[in-house]
Length: 322
Image (cartoon, rainbow, N blue to C red):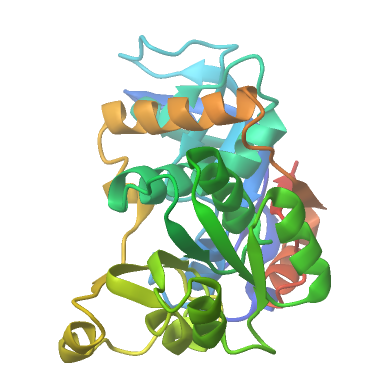
């Protein structure tokens, strides 16, 4: 089968299209023929060496498709089932073998490409807005990179909860997109002082929680935007890693809370994974969250996909299709 791998870390140029043996499922595993694979920032962190991985590596931690083989002991899935999975690697390929307990059935109302575009991103949103910091109706919330793959889902989910969403974006075109998704206020973070704008919008109060996937470039603005006992939820490094956090700054800022969660700790068990996926698919099936697939790339174009993602030229979700 065809797959994309990197044998050394570096820029997008290290990604290569190769022929590899089609894997066979072992005990407790299923093989999934991909309809589409999600492209996420974590893939670029692994490729670039920020997150160490074993080489050579076929990146890609989420995909959706159809089960075409099952290993011994698998009873909850069978050949022909439509599934999405969350796994470590192997998504940038025509097929992948994954643990059956890390795959969930996709309802008929949800297209497989939509599932692939939203699985990791959407469950990230579910975990962070419902469980990491349970957002309540009426609260002010700051969402960075609101026109990105996670950001678009987060804005819609927060509006469904009833939060007041302050979104930041990098361009006027993306600002229009954030407004269309329901953002109540939009800040151009490259041109405006984020903390000053947040204070103006909230009457000096600040936000109850800020979700920051940008990292270095937005760190100070995020910290300065928090209300007393506000939460800083950092979950990405799009502009580079955020600086170290001095605990005394959190105290002086108003007993602030800084956390660096990862989705995998919120879907650590099969039961947590099933519950998170069910909540996501319900939001999609009922139309409260709409998934925009902004870009679709062939496997052979994985390098261009990473270049587009890292230059922040993408809007919404990006997919690789076999």
